[in-house]
Image (cartoon, rainbow, N blue to C red; front, top):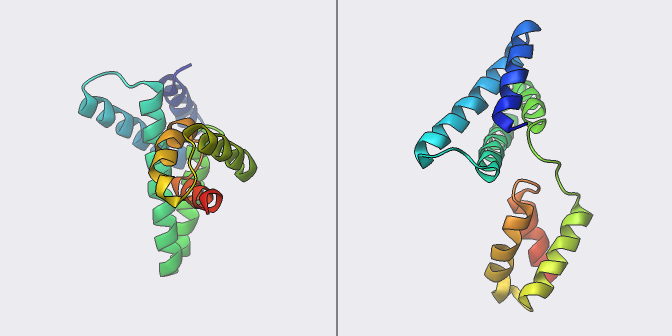
Length: 147
């Protein structure tokens, strides 16, 4: 079942169950997917859908950080529940240990030896972990391995 089909089914279920917040989040994701399809001028691949979901998650995490700094607990709670809904559509996140193993393999593949090879490592690594790990965490772990 494609992501769009899953979203449509969940949207119908949310309407039946009168889950307003879930319905709003699903509609936002569907709109983002449709906008991306229009921008690309073609049907979205699974990778494109993953990119959109990752972008939506990142936007909410950034908002969460800002709302926490501003002391807006009402908005923090809202973003937490939106994140929980969105994470159901994202692929399972890699653990730090799994991510470290993938990084070590990639470093060996590209024969990186210092921080100067960071670009090579990241270029080879990101397609492997796209949507499955936070870019900032990946960056931090790669730097640790190259140090």
